[in-house]
Length: 389
Image (cartoon, rainbow, N blue to C red; front, side, top):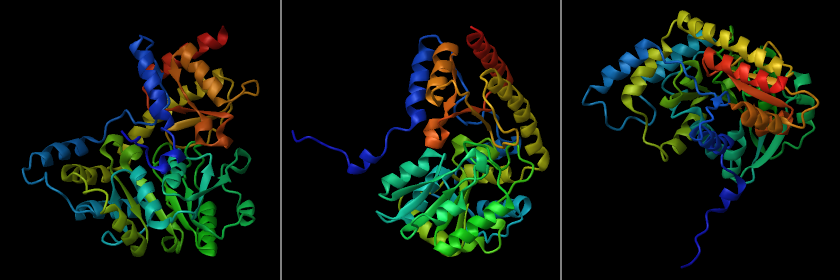
């Protein structure tokens, strides 16, 4: 039999770090280790009661189970537009400037397919979400990493970017509030990004799922005048509304960009489940009090995460937002992977090593807040025990 070999594009990517590591964690648990997972950002809190009620009610409708429009139901697009106007002060046309997504991770692929030819340049943050790199590799783009550093508040160095050969660059990925560092957005940063994109003809893609977590001032890059001309913003209900498994997200931009992305998307998936879209409408209508209640829980968890960082002799910026805590490891540690593995194997607590987000993350670790206070306290005690020994 002739040997079957996969497509060459698989040589450019590897299995996602969390996919591999969580297999190891599962094996440890099967052996009775009882590992506490402080690695993955999968919210453990539920969506609003109104969201669940609407899902159950709509799922009883016998006509609700067929294929749905590729652009989503009108009520969902309108709800996204209302949400953006209320919280971000951005006016969006629900018919032409919004595209629902089956998660923003899907949107990274669709945007890349819509804008990048093989060999086109794409600016990738270091550190940054690994999917920006893996998807860019899958579509055959040329990856051009740009540095984000703590001394520059984890913002791009625009002077350095201007010295970079940008002649072939089509796309730039940004992500504020930033993951994994928790660095907040600023109006000045967004204004610089919009101006940079317009100057060089580079589409600026802001991935914005964290702006409601431990953040009193949600911001959108689309608030900048003229931003829709050159920017795409993705947003997601996974983090902000505790709906990671629902895969409910959206992107917003000018009508031309949205049309191009829809051309790709409509050839890949067949829309979303109507009851989930109807429930998402209810989620987007949540009042401020609902967000406040969620953040009250996250603040208590954040306090415990900060104590864990203290025990590990890690330093961190208290102004971070989002559902993680990012800390710099002590000088005596060789790197983030070594420290994370020591905590995993000696204390049975899984933390995320920063190296997976890029070389600029190697001296950092990340703690997820998606774990209840009892488990965070238990993690703290386990880590204290191995450090004190």
